[in-house]
Every structure is written in C-alpha cells, then in structure tokens.
Length: 104
Image 1 (tube, one colour):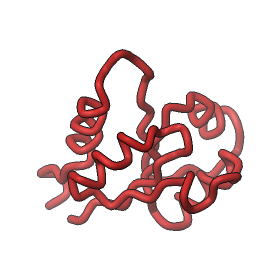
Image 2 (image 1 turned 90 degrees about the horizontal axis):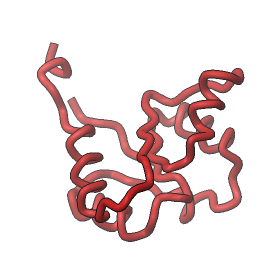
Image 3 (image 1 turned 180 degrees about the horizontal axis):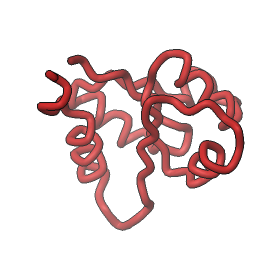
C-alpha cells in the first residue's frame, strides 16, 4: 500500500523538508504552497487530499480534539529538542513506512 503524501507545516525547517525529500517521501511544504494559510485551512486541505500533516505546532492537537475541525488521516507532531534534523527525518520516514497491517 502506498503511503499518503506529507504536508509539512510552515514551522518545519527547510533542512528537514529537504532531508525527507531526499528519502524519497512525497512531501509538500505549506511554506511553498499556502504560506499564509491558517492552521484550520491546512488541516482541511490535508483532509480533502488525504495527506498526513507534519508539524511542531501543539495547537493542532487542540484544534482536532477540543474544537470541531475535520482531521486528516494523520498528524505527526514533532517535539522541539536538541536532535539533529537527520534524526527527525529518520523518525518520520520510519513512521511513514508500510507495515504488515497495510497488506491485510
């Protein structure tokens, strides 16, 4: 099963976007496609296209769970820390890999 494309929120650093693309993940950056879009607009856009949202923004959890916002198939929340971008890229690529459940 093919994994859906990722939508990188505007707070995802360009080096991480570049590293994920180098890992051959289909990734669209909000900063490139919809730079002034609200969080709600990003979520709706991702929902309508079946995209996973990649973000460092904790507000996405509140939008989905505390307010009536339609959620995309997945929101990948990354915590800010001292990790190098390569570790973030590896973690996202791993989470995005097909599993045995995809073949059932």
